[in-house]
Amino acid sequence: MLLGTEQAPGKLAYQRIRVNQAHNALFNSLNQAMQEPGFNARYLADMKLWVTHSQFIVEHINAMTILAREHTMLTPDLAQRYLQSCEIALQRCQQRLEYDGPGSDTNILEAPDNLQEGPVTIMERHAKQILGHLSVMHTISSLAWSQRPQHGQWLVRRLRKR
Image 1: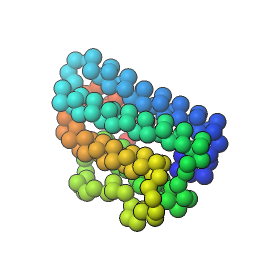
Image 2: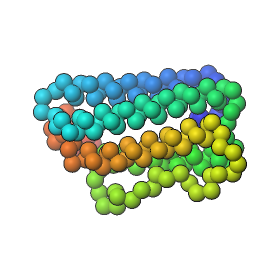
Image 3: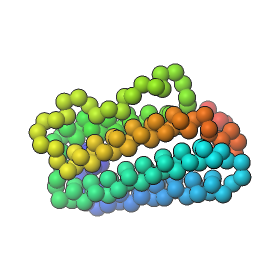
């Protein structure tokens, strides 16, 4: 919504709350995993770092929500390109956590070419930093794949759905 055409303050505030709730659920899941016996310590350390970068993204989203209320936005074309880059990066991070397949070494999380159309706005800086955090999260996901738990209810549920 922040990079789209919907700028209604009430809707943006509601979505910001949902983002914060989702991050809190992620943080709580990590804390619960840390309490359970048998989790690989290296995996948990990687996931702590992953959650930290998630928190940074949430902070950028919170700041962008305030900027959107003040109408400090990007041009529609620039916003669309950042939106596409962020969506692709999020999908790649999610896929990376679930599957370690061929071609996972390619880095497609770079900001799109030719995004410099003028001075960099505060909103654009936040979008670039979000892409940077997603890139780090993708790398962490790659490292954590081999250390991921091979047991537990979450894995059983995941495998049954496929």
